[in-house]
Image 1 (tube, rainbow, N blue to C red):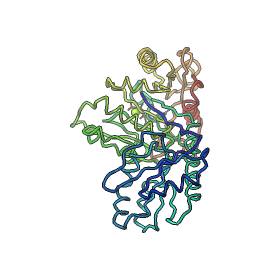
Image 2 (image 1 turned 90 degrees about the vertical axis):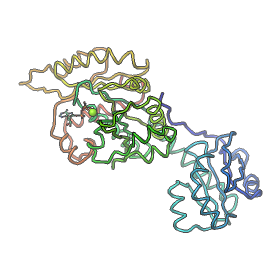
Image 3 (image 1 turned 90 degrees about the horizontal axis):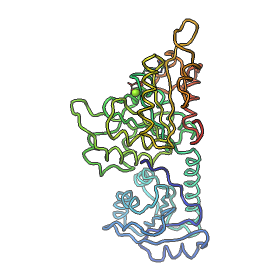
Image 4 (image 1 turned 120 degrees about the vertical axis):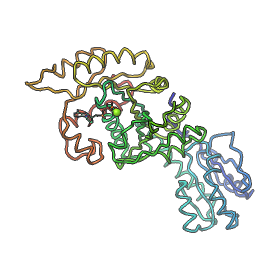
Length: 402
Ligand SMILES: Nc1ncnc2c1ncn2[C@@H]1O[C@H](COP(=O)(O)OP(=O)(O)OP(=O)(O)O)[C@@H](O)[C@H]1O
Ligand SMILES: [Mg+2]
């Protein structure tokens, strides 16, 4: 179900040139080495956005607005996002602007629409092409870097209330972001509990997903909307969470959730899903999109029995390649404990990867107080190390950690 990051092509650089001047793209084409650049020209009119290109996907877009009047330029910049979004084949394609010197306000807008470079009107064809090559190389490096991070989608389900699923989902998102040095596209934690989600509360951030608004107009769900509705934790990962107040209960259509998750997956290299215990039919589809599913229970007799039963429920729901992981949390070991040892607990799940985590509220409370994942705390102990090790396993390349 979930589509992942598309790796950009590495060969000839396809440049889409948007310009009203017939000689502009011809000048670029004349300077371009055929084995390095492929120039596709597209004229544009302010009155009418150009039709999307059907041909080779653009690796970079050069937008020439040299000849526009001040008024036209202001309008072009206002509509730039829509026009370029319609033309850009891939979100990774950087935008290079060629224009007279901008005012501060115009410049701000260009930065907001993430223009990769700007050259003034007198720039030579060679310098424009060089700017494109640089921008594409940067975009490719970034894309490949994230690709190397092994895109992954991990889901956490609490098998018993309060077992620690949300806690582990947060740590996993943190680890994904940390692995990519806090890259803003590295990880998104999505709470698919659209009523009682508490990820944002744990992290002391404001949830931004307007669930009712999105459900009313699902056709509006796109990358920009997701970008506008995710919240950011200071350590780098994004959080998508929203609440339908219980008084306004409605059944969220499966298509809305799917479109939302697909869009998030196309923006982020790693997805972590906090899945509620209360089941909704579309959650079965969500589970099918996972690389790893983590069933989180506690170390009580009831918790262990529930975890064993959950495996029977979830295994048939998962795709064959989905790795199932059992976590028995809040284990009280030691001489005075009447719970079996951690080793004995793991032995109860001989056919699955199982992890037993100790009961240890001390660091958890400090983390909640600071609105931070355990991983971001300076202080560490055996519990936080075990949690981070587990999160590291869950984001390791597929095939490992089964
Ligand atoms: N190993 C642990 N030792 C002590 N406290 C823990 C441990 N793991 C989690 N907690 C605490 O348990 C509480 C519940 O954790 P969490 O919200 O992650 O559970 P959950 O499985 O997501 O619950 P829910 O069923 O509500 O979704 C939190 O206060 C959390 O800090
Ligand atoms: Mg939870």
